[in-house]
Image (tube, rainbow, N blue to C red; front, side, top):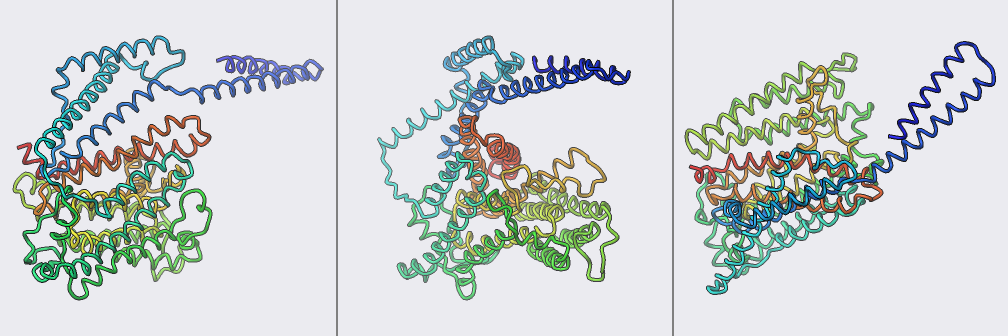
Length: 615
């Protein structure tokens, strides 16, 4: 690089100047040489700066376009698979075998390879994709061709099915409910908002607005099912009784199945209307408003984003040294609440492990000086808390191991749904205990409200209203996104709590530190995803394809914004805030893709319906 060459010349001249200076030469020659060295350094810096500016403005467009095409092809395949994936059989099969033996596939491969040769031989700047081996490049071209042929094959099947429907028309009375309209409008609105830097900086506001609106729509649904439907259909209200707890109690409406995604609104209302009696009815009606109150309190706990991040919040008040007693009391109450909300479905051994683990968490926070014990008047004896944290890790691993053992028994030895539900819940409990350890003390109420909202929505909203698996999945996804920001996260790298990666470690150990930091950052989405699996697994008796539907919808809900955002940032690559706003958001989404893939793999492994198909 010319700038580097100038720098080496200046460096050599500088060496000559130092020699003259050390020899005690104070003549005009030394002064002139000094001025010359200074001028050479400044010219070298200017040339280097210019060179770097040119490199920043140059993007590897060919590699970017190849990646974007693959992402959009996968998204299109997912969208085309929606009818079959959400059917009663929950089939998701990519039709790749027939296209691989078609003439179109080989023609596309040849054409793409020719384009690759032309681009790589004529490229002036370095191209990442061109620097790959030919074997890898040809593999990528084959993947693009196979995906394109699969898309064309899926479109052809859709047209064929639509032709059959025209010949044999079936009367369809399906209509969209308010929940369906909100889900569609919310998803489209959020995706479109990713094209604006201000909306990315304040994305938490979008999710807060969506979950608040969702609560209001749920309130309307509850009122309709408890009052309006009862008045419109008195005969039905006398024959259909509510099994409100939904676990193990007899009911006259046992034969009611969860409606499929395509069922009409009226048939859904008829099948899912279960009128609550006594206090349960009023708790159900009040639950959306209680959830709204919880969300409002959580917003005050952590200010996030850019515009209002500087404003003081309740979290700052709690973490100040003057309010350590208040923080200690809040942390103790939060840990007690976590135990009572989680332990109800755990085995006795897991309950004991959970109690000891939560006690260990408070001891860990006290040892590092975040909180104090009632008998402790100062915090002079501060340590790293390594022993206490490792004590908690033992119980986390124990609970997760117990859950894994139950899951393996239910999957391999006997298909016992109750054992499977217990195993899933114990794994969930282990993750909650790990989250409580990694969260800072002032953030423990976020975990409490997360568990409380999940409990209330399960018992008082989802089970009485009997939403289908797709709707339940999208609600879980929305709340998971909102809790990501309730934790105090944002789309900026500065809000990542890297201290979580050192809990229980004496120094930096790469793999555990990366895992703990990622888990602490994405705790909200992860806990809501695992809770979704626990809920859908308990509903398998009513809808055998519930877990499959949930897995597909969860993958689709994350794929849509990621794919569209990739297109947006490719177009906005010269935007003023491309590196400060758009790039960090892409990094967050990239990590989230890996987490979503892991979640979907876990869903597939737990899908009893899928395992029967494999057998």
